[in-house]
Length: 407
Image (tube, rainbow, N blue to C red; front, top):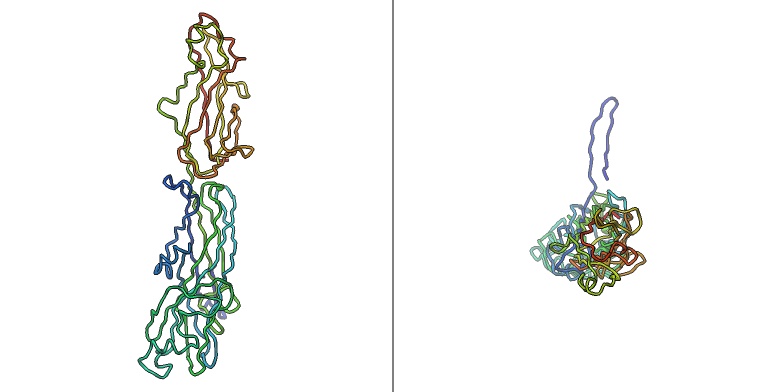
């Protein structure tokens, strides 16, 4: 969001200024990892700043992240008597929509602010404010009725930071389990002529969509919070920010894998009866079926569809033969590896393919890394009239099976 203000004189433009609202990009990536095939989730690629950069183990344990924004809150009046200073953060889950810029598909992301911190800045050294110049650590403790700022008011609870201070500053971080006020009360004996928070740290948690159900590409969306009195983030009565909003810009990058591999020599299929041709020659009985099972290896993290293309008049029958021997028909049956759910919600789906017709969608229930499926090339008994005693020759045909992620 961009704010522009102009002052116009009688006949001339006197001044023009602009201010950019606070923005933070949150970028996440899904890229299947063959070493962790069961880990099918986004990875947050946003560099941590502020709290989680200082305490990475604490954040990793709670599956949360943080960023620091250069927004400053300043008191508009002196703090004295029994006044309270604190903040309220939007700790409840909020939703936003992210949209694929190419396909226009949309998904939902949820985010919550689970912690907030800053460094307060006093107008005078803490020891001076309590009447004991030079005793600044004691001053930071005695200024507030409940002690130093690593000890928050309910319902907040302390983060791991401990005692990062100077005579006039004190850094703190509070966890925010609820979207309610957490405040510190100034001891009635003291007065602070001015106070500010010079930056703000936010810890956040995410609930991300299922990447296996998403198409490849970039999904973008934004969520805007208001800052200041009456806004989503409040830093206490009389504390005004130098910026009134914070926008989180989400970029979800989905990079799927779809790979089909044949073993060496797997592109040339030789069909024969069960037990080989010698059994037919020896017994004189026509085979009940002629076929070849050809394994393939599938890696997939996304939805896809499949189509057969061959020389055909339509349906599931493909032409095979030559002018000297004669002609027949063959079919192709596809069996997916376990973990691939096909039409009818069947895991390990199996069926005969149809010429020039897309079948799908197929969707992995988890990341499938080089799992074996099967193609059966089959001449059924009703197409074996070409078989005659004493015949010799080769029937040939072609089939192409297309796996396409554009469902």
